[in-house]
Image (tube, rainbow, N blue to C red; front, side):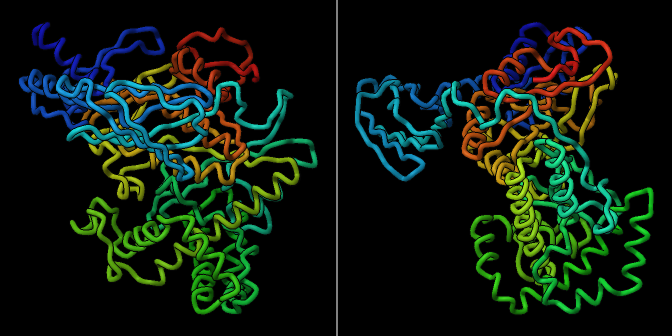
Length: 544
């Protein structure tokens, strides 16, 4: 490939947000192979089949970007003027532009002016607003993200040092649980930490998982970042248990109690066996509730209203269980998102709705009790979801199915890492107003007092590896970090939650500078001798 073609390919990659060369943790310069770059660009929608298509694709991309009337997202700071930059066709210079700004609270402001870049009012409240622009035959819509001022603290936490404990919930044993720690055990742990003067209890992700396969679900490969894992339900705390004799009889059955005792005495945690036992009880409680328990019906209906995707999630899980296969192998109609009543049983559908409602109830209770005792629940937000997950099925336009997220070679993984889940497409996220990102963060902040953001560098760029290539042949796909940080600041301020970013490994200094500016805490590794904090070093434990 000649130098001119190489330059054109690099330019095309840059216009799609793809960084094809970088320095690794050893300080060595790395370049992504040409065929890997072409593969990723195809996944990003570039109109290419081979290297010969690059010049035409580059011209098309340039025209698409320069022809964009305005950006899909504009970020501003509270109390500051926000510029909206327009690319005005020559034929419309001086023409009158009509602008309508709809605030998040529903208030609307309209004005007309000569068509050119302009400043939004400096009194915009914190939140997400919608700007509609009309001129001649052009109509455009922009999401205005008005973030808190940089001086505004994200939470009420002071500068005093605090301590807490971390423990995977599934490894927390008690005589009240059934072989895997549950939210009741977490409640007891938080109370104990409070008595000792601690201020938080952390755990691995508690997100939804598929329990019907023979594999142990990984906390970092959830079925969804919007729903929870019913494995962690505290059965004894479910109100329906007091009025459901069938469930009480089952839990008192000798065979059932012996199975629980066997789980508790085992040195190995068998998630599938524990879930099998708990599910038998939960199915009875679900059937009992839907058979006519009216006293809590209003609470359940409120849950459905607050979680509009809950019924889709329940159908998805039900169809998956009934078919026994992951959604990429479903029939075309179901794979495309069209699920119907005959595709699943009503009992299983209701079971998943019921258990999600219970999880939200028990997490709410846990967070409320913890705050009353001065102890926050410290949750973990994973960096992605696998390709066969509910989230990828439901929001497939956001994901790149032919690539995997991972990491380049480093001190611990000399051949790099492929984590086996598809990256989100940053361009699509912007065009769709970051609705999935916001929903996932809100889902966690509702219950957390602190939230750990896995792989914080993913706010800036994510390392993607095209299918069929080794992990050291990937490239970085860039995101608009300013927009993501603005969203995080809005959501964290509204919920009063402290944010912590996992910034270990190959992390540029600029990422940590951004974290400090945005009020996001860092993570450190304890080791005997402190190293200097260089751009590519794993950071030692010094405390924040």
